[in-house]
Length: 234
Image: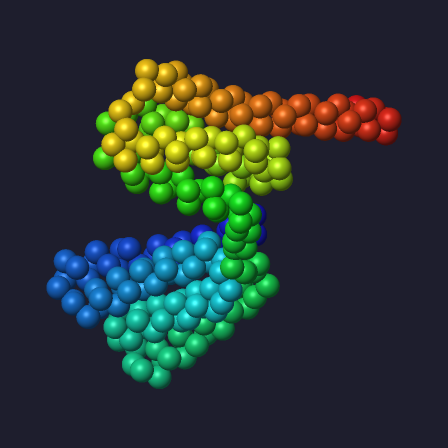
């Protein structure tokens, strides 16, 4: 909550400049208007930096607040360079004190998927690139179903061992069919049924993986409920 309010303080501090901006606009005072506009834009930039929260953003936000104070004092109020710099230094120092200790850090990137998943994704992408030139439109639903399995496995790579054999079978079958069709083979009568089976099998594999996740969650809920009851909290 503190970080939330500190992130919103810069634009709130710039609100008093709105009347001055309108006055300078209608009075035709271009330099003063420019100072007011800069004095409102830089606090918005500071707020964005604080809400982004990357390493060093607090210092950048303090510099933006100092720059806003300098612009307003020098251009908007015509206070002179010395007074403007003093006010800017004060705004910078105050912002540094206010934002010191705010949590910063670059978001940790998720770990890359296992090599087997990357290889399967590359094989599927190569297959999909070849499909538009083939006269068999029923290949694409099979590829999409396999892609759904890969999506689930990338979110839960620990399930890869359970799906590895079925996934390899589907990719091998699809690659062989595509290769034969590219070589000029005519689709045999049983191809449609085989493609339907492959699509059904891929969707069934995805359903089984999800059912196992649901079963694991159900077990966790029961265990946690029992622990709460033993502790007298449930």
